[in-house]
Length: 287
Image (cartoon, rainbow, N blue to C red; front, side, top):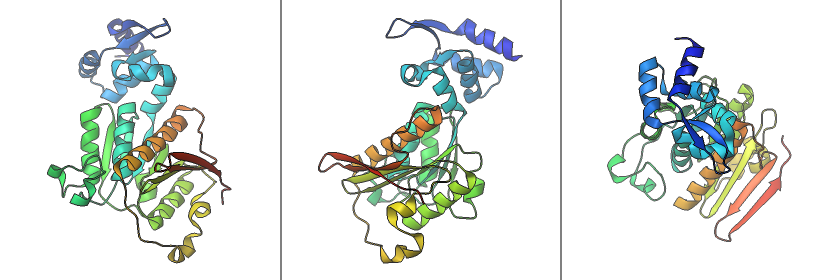
């Protein structure tokens, strides 16, 4: 079937809807998207992309329409995002990206769930203890949004495998829990020339920064990589709401970048203090 024939069939099956401001648009019901994908022998992702290209909003993204627009939603579905770490930050981030309709996710984590993760990690439940974090995150993606193509890699990202695993990604989320791995990830993203959205949590505190290609920031935030041995301290506790909030801020920055919207923290560090209820933005000089 030609592109024009697919478009005509989608328009034939679409419904005319009215937005909050009374504007009119076409929407494709969820059940119809499933049946049309089977009929046309298209993946769910390709079917939704074809619908958006025809100006039709799939029902599941109806609430995104006024905020992202048809073009923004289309950019999300065409995007590929890497997530390093699928625990406290990464578990929430993967969930949010899938629900928003980011079309391809690469989840990398070599760890498995333990009882110590139950206080904060989204996919850690009593029945999943011992299971791989990356695998469970991807399984959850398939339950939430069958149009999202997700892959799990149960390994530790390093200088050798990250350039290969992240190849083709438009953006990466740093949801890691240690500085050496963060520096390796930043270096890989710099080589691949893709943005990195950094997130970190400690107790009631969290921080988010956008690292642009050609503008590394981690040394500015944490000090030079070759001096980290002088700066180490015992890791603090992590609370569920801190991880959820920081992951949400990371996801927001990622979506704004992918959809072509302005990013509010891409030139600095956003510091969040949930105990004091304060948020501060600190200007940073890349280098």
